[in-house]
Image 1: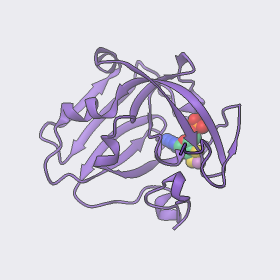
Image 2: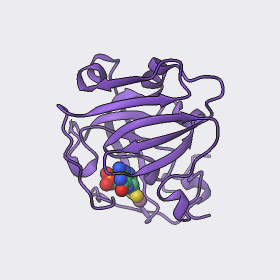
Image 3: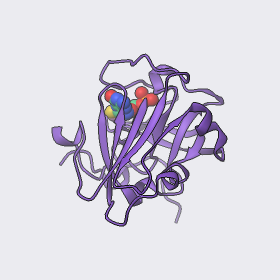
Image 4: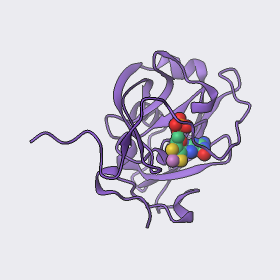
Length: 186
Ligand SMILES: Nc1nc2c(c(=O)[nH]1)N[C@H]1C(S)=C(S)[C@@H](COP(=O)(O)O)O[C@H]1N2
Ligand SMILES: [Mo]
């Protein structure tokens, strides 16, 4: 049986709504850096040229926001999160990550979810560089979770042993955020 395309309680949109805390950081590819730190064998700071030197992929997937809009077939480009993570080499104790953003936002996910084969450190969408309102120059895209886990203006990935709820997770959003299970609020 084919799975429906729209998860329960969601509606299709054809535009691309913008949702964030209303703080647009002054970050461009010239001053963007991604720091990998915490329980890793090699802490490191990656810049724009380094990101572009890694294998580039284009992935098409669906984007589901907990406020009930879904956009289907969004074409993203970037580097697989697992490629970026491999550069730092998480220690065996590292089970969870915090994604940090330049606007002060954070969100948490298990390391295994971050290493899924559809998770991107993205710099382009719709065949154009990511606009600042959509998290440019670089954001995370985690298609199997509600969109609040897809951190815009990504600044750091922190690895730790225990789970640490992020901005919305401490405010009552569900820790797992699987749209197919309607894990909206906890
Ligand atoms: N840094 C940061 N990332 C963020 C947010 C935010 O406020 N700050 N909002 C999240 C929420 S709630 C959603 S729905 C998506 C929206 O992404 P979009 O604005 O590109 O549609 O970004 C997520 N990533
Ligand atoms: Mo959201």
